[in-house]
Structure formats: C-alpha cells, structure tokens
Length: 353
Image (cartoon, rainbow, N blue to C red; front, side):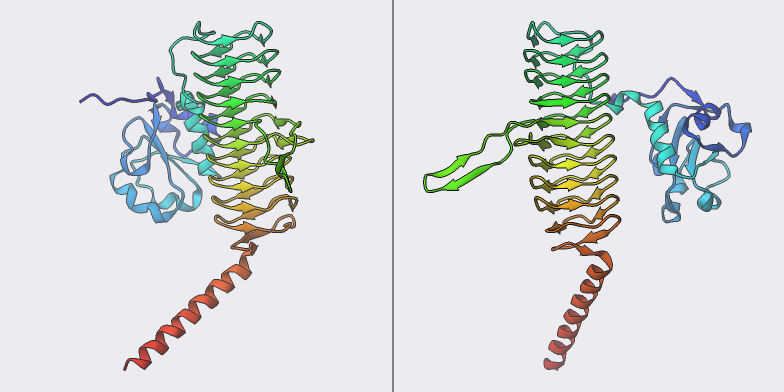
C-alpha cells in the first residue's frame, strides 16, 4: 500500500550547510557532505534523516537509530553511537526546531487546501476590500467591506474576514476561522476554527433579567502571534483585547474581553482567562488553568497546569494548585497530604489485625 506523506521530504541539504543554518557545530567535517532530507524521532530515524536527543533517559532509543545525524548538547554526547554524526548545540530543541522549519516549510503554516494561488472564483471579496499582491483566498471564504489584507497572506476555505479588519503581510488564516473587529499584525497564524473578535461576555443583572452590555472594543494581535484551533478571543468592551508580539496560544483557549497578554508568552490548551486581566511578558501558563479577572500576572511567571489563579502574581513567580500558590508551598502541601493518607492506611491496617 502506498504511504501518503502530507509533508514530503526536502530535496536535500548537506549536513555542513544545515549545521550552519541552525547554529550547531558539526563534530566531524568529514561527514559534512551527507545529505539530510527530513526529521524523525530517534527510535525510527534512518538514512537521510536527522533527530535530536534531549537527555540520557532516552538512551535506549539509540539502539535502533540509523539517522544520518543527531543533534545533542555536549553533556549527552558520550551516549551517542560512533556511527551517527553529531551536531553539538547549546539548545538541541531550538536547533531541531530550526532544522524542521528548513526541511519542512510547508508544515509551518496551516495547509493550503487547493493547489492554486490567487483569489478563488468561489470566494466572496467585497469590492471595497483592499488586497495586496500575492494574497490567496480559498473557496467559500468571505472578505468583508473595507477589509485590508497584506501581501503573501493566505485566507483558508470558509474563513470569514469581517468589515474593516486589517490583516498584515505573510499571515495565515486557516479554514473556518472568523476574524471580526480586529487588527492583525505581520506573520500571524490563526488555525482552523478560531474565533477572533466576537462579543465579550458582559451582562448587567437586574429585575428585568440580564441586560446585555455593549462591546465596542477591538482585538489586536501583534506580529508573529500564533492562535490555535478553536481558540476564542473576545473583543474588548470599551478598550482593546491585546495579544503581544511573538506570543503562542494553543487550541481551545478562552481569552475574555479586555485581557492584555504580553510579548512571547506561551498558553497551553484549555486555559480560560477572565476579563480585564493583565499578563506580562514571557509568561507560561499550563493547560486547563483558570485565571480570575481584573488581576495582574507579572513578567516571567510560570503557572503549572490545572491551576486556579484567584489573585495577582508577582513577576518571576512559579505557582500551581487550586488556589495557585508558590510551588514550594504546593509541594509541601502534597507531601503533607500523602503523609496523612499513609498514616490513615497504617492505622486502618493496625485495626484489622
């Protein structure tokens, strides 16, 4: 049976050139002419493929490795078999990421559905919209009145770009996504089914029931932001909802109105951020975390997955748990709970004797 490869191998790059491109050091230049075509996990890597090793605990995977090259840091070099050429890097994961982008550029953006570029005859583009050269619009996409889209950008099938939306250059808006009341920077990726710029969740309770509060703000996504599939980012009520430059947001994340997220943050799947919370630069938030509204998360904070954040967190903190607290305190609480449980088991065992 033929194997369908959605991301075919690269035509080939020499190991010497690859090392230069990814900022790694080729240990033996005699191997520099080896040709690399694709990436692979260590355990099943073969000829023409490159892999990477993060730690000694994966040493067993090397038993069946026949890669043409392996990336690692100096501390684990000794476990790599002599027959595998080695590229030394201070950050193997970063070097491997750059190698993957070079060898499989097609996989770095949402996949184009049709084979042709340009504006599909099955798409609707309002006559007042302005599209620069080299924009691709797939079938059934809708571009609203007054919208502007920069060169090199891609609009997937069934995507909706609302009236007066601005999208920068080299962006990808995948199939089924909707972008309304938003200003999008350059090199932004929005994956399938994401919802950008819809109403924030605002109501005023009263005797007559829940009165809807008007939401007249915008969403601003700065350059190099990536938004995962089925993530929602509500527009601001009277101010803007902002995601800072270089931040990466996973699938199925909810970002409420007026939230401000700093630069180069990473937010994993299932996170919910309530309205008007401010998140600093370089913050990392683990999956399924809930964050209260109207609080401040300082620069460089790390929040463990499945945490409940109810109050502001100082810069540089590492927290977790429900409610979220400093990790040392959380670990002490866990240790105390385990000790008490063990004590109860012992007492129960003594009573049965």
